[in-house]
Length: 140
Image (cartoon, rainbow, N blue to C red; front, top):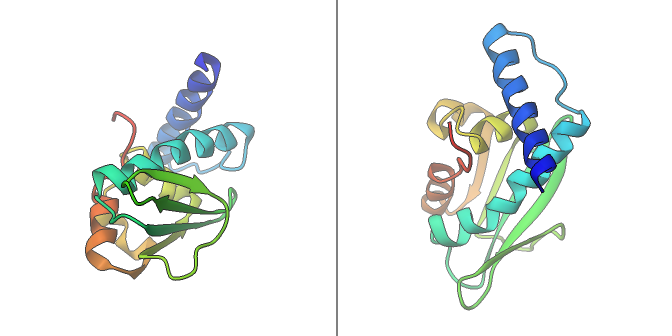
């Protein structure tokens, strides 16, 4: 676990430096795959607890780009969130964005309002806003 956390930290800080220098890259590396997994682990708590998604609802996250994925956060009848790769029919919210924007949002490097042109929202706007307002899961 410690090595995974270190790999995550190094890759995220590399992306910080690349953004500051205007030199994008390495977005599809093994470090990016580790970052995806670490960030996705936090998503059920963001959706179910922090954003207060209603019981028995689902939220779909569709990310495109070098690291592509589609994940559904399901909130059970007791309000607990879980994540899986199966799409949901009729989710409360669908959020779609590109990989780099997802990382920058989840790592607290950009606010949703500043990246609104790169985030597509379908469904319950209020819930989507609550999710995006709580999306940052790493310290700055």
